[in-house]
Length: 132
Image 1 (cartoon, rainbow, N blue to C red):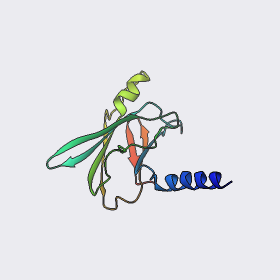
Image 2: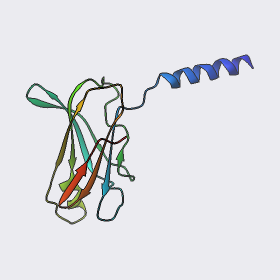
Image 3: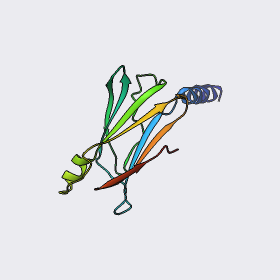
Image 4: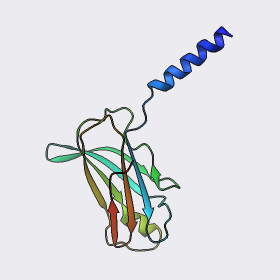
């Protein structure tokens, strides 16, 4: 019994230390109200006058990338950019899109908080906001 309690305590303390990823994205198709699976997404951080690539992912079947920020890096204050490759997404469906890429630039002022970037998408328009 003591061994079990000790192991349980170790497992819980390890779990408590693990922090969730600070950045997630979600893409929803406004035409049919469904998640947009297969959208290529990149994350960059502004360094000087340019952008430093940090991560690349593809939205899952729910249209999400639940952990976009690289685990081996520290989420710091600064300007970041998420680029949704919507042209590629629509071409895979045999369609065209007016916006081949949608860059969303955002300012991280409180890196201890979670940042969620939803994208509401259609071939000729989009909307985004800071989600939760």
